[in-house]
Length: 89
Image 1: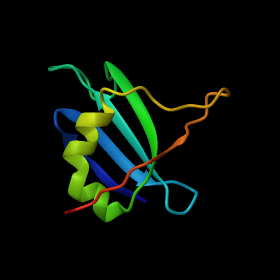
Image 2: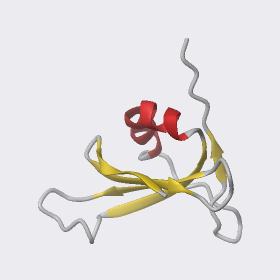
Image 3: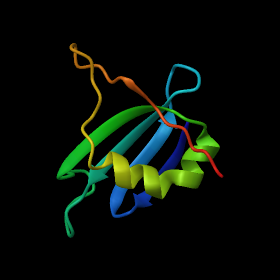
Image 4: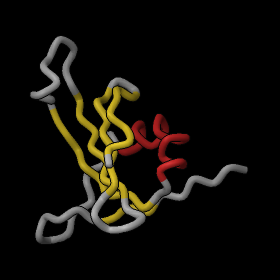
C-alpha cells in the first residue's frame, strides 16, 4: 500500500509497505526543474524500519538526510534495511 506519493523538500518521494512486516520502501527521486517526472536526474531507494506514523511526522527531515546518503546495499546489490528511530523529547 502506497501511503506517501508527493514532493517533499523538492524531491519526488514515494513510500509504501514492503512485503516484510514493519519495513517501508522509500524512493527519493530528483527531478530537474522543467524535467519530466518519469525521467528523474537520479533516484535512491531505501528500506526503512520505522512506523508509518513516524515517517509521516518526520518525512522532511528523513528525506533531507537520506538524499545526501548513498543507498545501503549488500554485496549482491540488494537493499539493506536502515533502522530509523524517531524519538520525541
